[in-house]
Length: 377
Image (cartoon, rainbow, N blue to C red; front, side):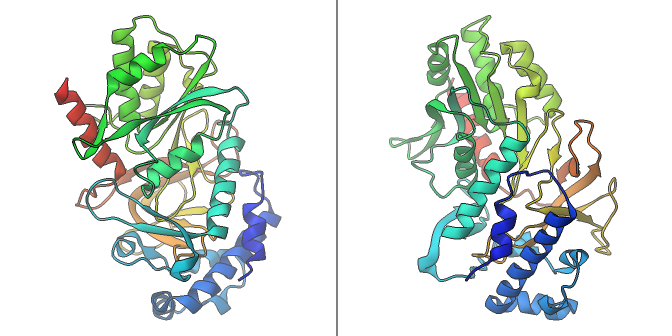
């Protein structure tokens, strides 16, 4: 099938330039996807019938927010695949080694759209560079974890500056039959890098934090090139499992190895949704034109105003291979606008896990690997 408005939206290079024109394109793109999913998925039709809202009733941009969402927990027990198996190009999972897993499906056009819009979103917020760098990727080795969502996402971020080399630091150990993290090996590797070369750290912040601690222990006074960069994502805890803020993390890196605090960035995202929400220099995650976020009251499901906390709903039309155009999460979020960085649109002011059960996702599974490496020392 052809989806001209979805393609038009995802080909827009200005990721944070909002206008009436691209708002209309977003509406038309959502309408295209909703109509397709309505025809493919009985459960989408059930949700539509129950809510009294179907694709034929989409008349204006505001109707995008009337599309009944899939609950994220439902996606952990049903795939909602909307194209034949032979058209699926890539399948990603949302967790590492155990726990409930969400499978996200992409056909070739949907995957191409995601790769394009992700690159636009990262570069337009200042994460790109023309200076070559050595990448240290603190995530599962893509060669052994090809279906892990965070590993795929980390790989995309290694395209934002020319790569001198790429090192995947959470490696598969054939003897143990599991992933492990040889911190001293990677510290020795970064010490060998010429002082004129930049480095880029990508991945779990707990691993980056612990790595830098070991680096300054093994090589006191070590400083990275000032063009070095960090793109963290997946669980904001240090190596002891204690929560740390983006500000504290950035200050630690600047004070310990000279990495400029404004070059320490973060991304937020969900496997069930796909759109990346990249952080500006202030450490706040901005909403690009390819998706929409809103918060709802957990009891009434009323849409809340900016500044009020509620359940996060995530909306995007890019993936036609799966019925995840509108997803209701268990995350509790506050949205605001007019960020002090000067970028337009909404940004995530705060976000935290809701519910009474701790889902074991990629970051939690990775934390266990880091814990094992600590005990082995």
